[in-house]
Structures are given as structure tokens and as C-alpha cells.
Length: 325
Image (cartoon, rainbow, N blue to C red):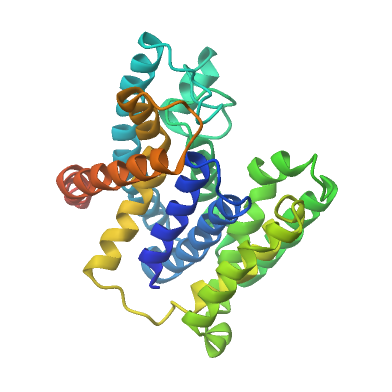
């Protein structure tokens, strides 16, 4: 499974965990922190190999992040506003699929929903899963400081590991560890460290074995229900890293690139589409497998259309415009 396909697989795990009540616990959390780890690796790569750390290089890095993140997010935000109004007008409970779905409260809520900058605090999101995306935006803002060399990455790992330990590795602290900026930065920092040590790790690359153990690790919850919320989240980073280094020298084809681009939109839209399917087919809100299947297929079709018709052309135009600045 190449990197774009793996990202699509991670988005699938998040989707099925939100849309099907029978899904096992743990893989969605592993997937989100897996996204952070992969982002850390990629940011380490592009800053060191492409942009550099000059004033102009960092400027181009930030502009490229804006082009990559915000077109798809703004499209999802507009759809989220439309679905929110449909839910209100048709008495669909906003917490049916995700308790964070709702109208932004106060200036901080509005600013977060518009900017994704994590200094603004809110619990009401028009794109229900955008809290994690906001953390990633925050990681990008900090990236030029911690990807300059391997020792900065190691220091970030030590500090953020200490923050996780300080929060206590128990069930009650899972929410704070999983969704906190400084605690989640641990996964991003590990991704950066993998970039600096990729030549060493690539000696152990084996994509089939890596995927086998990644999936096998998800099954531990069946025997130890508390495992994902305690140590499973951290152990999952080992297997995500194994998959990542097994992809370092694998060239992506057009399909893999498409799936990688679609993974972002699938992640953003799956719950929003789910609310629409609830309304359209009058499901009983029990998140049946049939409900998941219809919602997920609809999400994939919509995501494909958005990527091919809207997002890619818009990103190309923005990149060409930025080159002329």
C-alpha cells in the first residue's frame, strides 16, 4: 500500500468509526495520530529538500500550506453550513454522529471555523472533524523551528513525551492527550525524526509486513478494551512509522496520488455527508452498517468530484499566481 493509498485507508478508518456503531475502537485514533506523524515526515522533507530556511523559503512553505489546506476546507465549510441548516430545519439532532457539529459560539468559535488556527478555542464546528485539522495547522506554523535538524526533533519528542506523561496515561486523560496541541505534537515530532533517520530505517522496510502488523495491532482492543486509550495510541506510532519508512523509496502513480488527495476531502466530509444521508433516507440514527455504506460511497463520489473539478484546478491556479508574486 503506497503512501497515498495508506492515507486514504486512514481516512476510511476515521469514517467508518464515526458512521458505523459496530466498528472496533482504536483505529480511528491511531489514524488521526498517524496523519500527524506522516505530516511531520513530509514537512521535514519539503523544508529541508525543497524550500530551505531562508526568509523566502519559509514564506513559500507557508503559502503552499495555505494552498494545500484551505481550498478543500472552505468547500467543506460551505457544505457544512448548508447541512447544518438542513438539520435545524428538519429536527435532526446535531449530536447524532459527532457531538462537535454545531453553530460556532462567540468570536473564538467563529475565528476558529474561519481560520483553523488552534489558539481559538471552540467545541462547535461546522466541519465536525476540523479540530484535528486545526492542530495540524498549528504544527505547520511551528514546523520551521523543529525541522531544522535532528536534534530539534529529538528535543521536541522529549518535551512532548513529558507532557503526555504529565497528563497521566489513563482512561480519564485520553481526551486531553489525544486532542491537546502539545501532547499531539509528539506524533508530528516523531515523523520529523523519522525523516532525519530515514536511511537507517529504510534498511528494515517491508511494506506487506508493516501493513500486517498495523492492522493486527488494531485488534488488541478486542482482548484489552482499555488499550487504545492508554498505550495503544503511542504503540500505533511505531507501526505507522514502519509503514511510512517502507514507502520512502516507493514511487506513487496517478491513482495513488488521487487517493492521497481524496483522503483529505473524505476526512473532512464524511460526517457532514452522513447527516445528509440521515435526512434523505430517514435512518433511525443507530449508525447501521447500511447507513455507513451509503454515506461512505456518497462521500467518496463527492470527494472525487471536488478533487478533480474544484480543488486541483484551484490549487494549480493559486500556485501559478504565487509564482508571479
